[in-house]
Length: 107
Picture 1 (cartoon, rainbow, N blue to C red):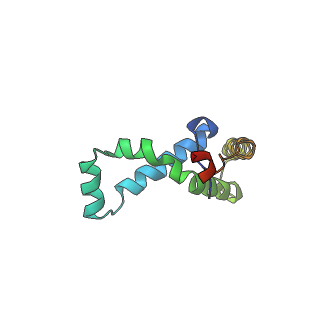
Picture 2 (cartoon, rainbow, N blue to C red):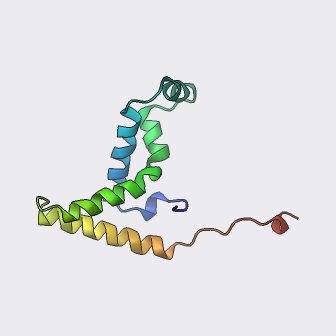
Picture 3 (cartoon, helix red, strand yellow):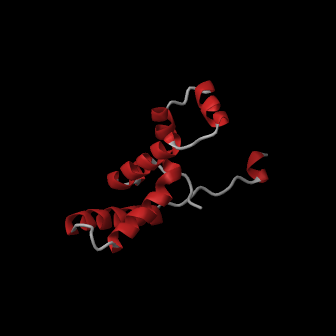
């Protein structure tokens, strides 16, 4: 499980892909309760994507990684995907999650 992801830590290609997946999720066959809660809290599709796209980063990375192995993917596109994945992995490996709060720190 990945810690909190900041928008600046995600290359544009991965961010756009994650946003597309978030939009597809919102448009998918959601229950009436999901739609009702979205309307109740004012979450339009755009608001949902802006708020929750980081939840789709892992799947975006997996799909982009799979595209590298596809024989029909153009070399130029493969290079862009590869650069984005390497940039994301190196940025993510240098970011350390905050340690969990202890009860001692609250006293």
